[in-house]
Image 1: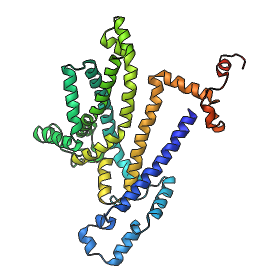
Image 2: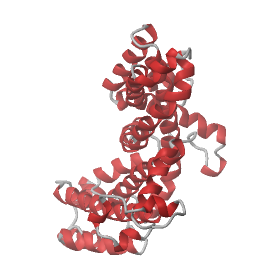
Image 3: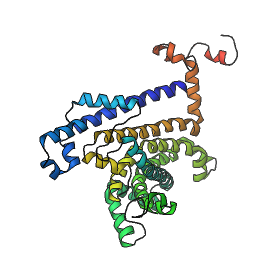
Image 4: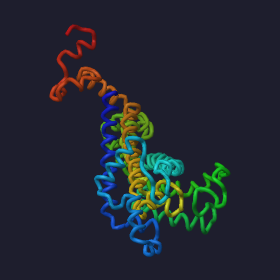
Length: 361
């Protein structure tokens, strides 16, 4: 477990460096002038050359890319992500203010799409080629082909504008101070964006789960259970649930990045003040520090989802936990990877089984 955690921490550090450097390169190649984008076209045209040079020096617009990235990376090691040009605040403060609404939206959409997709996928697989299967598959194909922002516009026009069941946007009522916002009001504003993201993320999990259920029903285990007189749902619950849940869990944990990508557009449609809307604002203003901070946070969320999936494997399927333990024992313990050569791992150590059972080596 120690080796597993250390290896994943190293991967996370490399991921932060790569993602942040790519963001800096893309912003550097962008034709957007940060000074002009942040002061406005009219003010930029009437500004003197000395003032423009002063603002460029203040925002680091004229410095080479390695210098700007090196300074940002040095600040990151000290917990400083820089200053946001668009918000004129530290990046950590901007992310902290907008993280709670985004995390609430992403958590509900992630859990809702995973649970709904798994249930529908199991139902479609158990009713293969019958009318429930056709309806669920058709609905998933439609949801897959619809962009999330278009779905958000439809839901907004129908349920917010036409029916008036939900507010048209924002995270709270207009004119209400943040300290006076109630839980009911916050949930009321969160509901429609969360429903939109949930519906948009159901299809991949549903279709993948359906295929796994169909594969299980056609396998030898289900055939043997059928010969023993077990019903369809009984044999699935006793023999197929774990085999179907593991791939679904992997896919759902890996879909965090896709859900966040959809949240960027959905937050823009609903004017929801989250990290997605802040990312769009930073991109339009060439705010590289804020873009890099949001990209790093998003990358760590995706990495954390995959890491959580690896940890949950042992909970759902104990055989994987036992295999990892046996592999560590064959390598000479938890710290064996520090002293053994890689070629020593190809075959088990001689007489390892007798030693574990208390026999003589």
